[in-house]
Length: 482
Image (cartoon, rainbow, N blue to C red; front, side):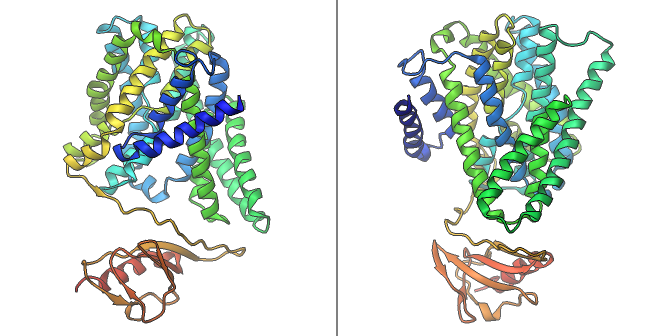
C-alpha cells in the first residue's frame, strides 16, 4: 500500500510538472490520477467508503479555508467587502436556486435532487481561483473580489447543503419557517464569532510564545484550526466559516516567524488539495457516467452560462463594476473542492440516489475545471483586464523580532521607466528606512549607497509600517525618467 501511495503522489507531481506549460490546474491532475489508480480503472486501490471520504475531506477543507483566510489581506477584504460578501451570500443563494430550478424544469431531476445539486455546486473554488489569478496582474478590485468571494462563499454552500440533507433525511425540526431561518443565521453568526475569537486568542498565544522554537508554532497553528472548527461544531455553528475568519485575523496580525508560517500553510494547503482530490478521484466509478453524463453536462452549462452570470449581475448591482469586469468575475467562478466534498453528503447520509448526485456533481465540476480553470488567464487577457505577473522571487528575507515594534521588512518591486537607474544614496527614503537586500533576476545584491536600482528589482526595505507607501513612492519617483 505504501508503494502504491508513493506512486500516486509521484505521478501527481510529475504530471503537474509536465502539464504546467498548458495551464492545466493541479486539482484536475489530482482528480485524474485518483480515477486512474481507483477501483474502476486499474483497480490498484479499491475505495468506496463515502463516510470515510466525507470525514477526510472535511479535515482537508479546514486547512484549505484557513489558508484562504490567512492569505486574504485586510486591505483587500475592506476594498471589496460589500460586493464579495454579497456574492458569497446572496450570490450563492441565487446560484443554487437558479441551478436547482433548471435541473428540475429542464433536466427532469426530482425536486429534492435538483435542490441538493443546486446547493452543492453553488460555491467557487478558492484554491483554483487564487492559484490562477495570482499568475496575472488583474485590476485590483476585480481580482480581490473574485479571491475574497471564493474564500468566503464555501461556508454558505456548506450550510445550505447541510440544511437540505437534514430536510431530505427528515432530521430537521419541522417547525415554523422562521426557525429554519434562525438556525441559518446562527450558523453564520456563530461561525464568524468563534472564528474571530479563536483568531484573537491565537494571535496572543503566538506573541506569548515568541521565544519558543519555531517548530512549535506550526503545531500551535494546527491546534488553532482544530479548535476553531471544533468549538463552532460544538455549538452547532459553521466550523468552516470559523476557520476562515480565524485565519483572516491571524494572517493580518503581527506574529513571530510570519514568513515561515506562511510557507508552512502554503505547503499544508497544497498537500490538503492534492490529497483531497486524489481521494475524491478514487471514489469515482467512471462506468457509471454513462447514465449521468447528460444531466452532468446540463448542470455545467446552466451553472456556467445562466445561473452564475445572473447571480453575479444581481449581487454586484451598484458596486461600480463595468460589464466586462462582471463578465470576468462570472467566468472566474470555477467549481472545485467544496462541491465535490459536499456531493458526498447525500450518500453519507443514506439518501437514496446519493451516488447519482455525487457522479453528476463530479462530472459538472470536472468540466468547470477543464473549461474555466484552463482559460481564466486567457479570458482576462481577451477582456483587456490583465498582464502577466512577475514571477515571485525564490529568495526572501524575514524580520524576526521578539519585541513589539512598529518596524516591518517589506518586499517592494521597483516600478519605473525601462532603462531608468537610481543610486541607493539618491533615493529620498523616509527617515529610518533602509534597503537591506536587492533581488535582481534571482541574483542577491547587498546594497550600498553606490548600488544602482533599476525597474523590476525586488527590494527588501526595513521601515516603519506607516511609511511603506512613502518608500514605494520615493523609489517610483527616482525611476520615473531615463
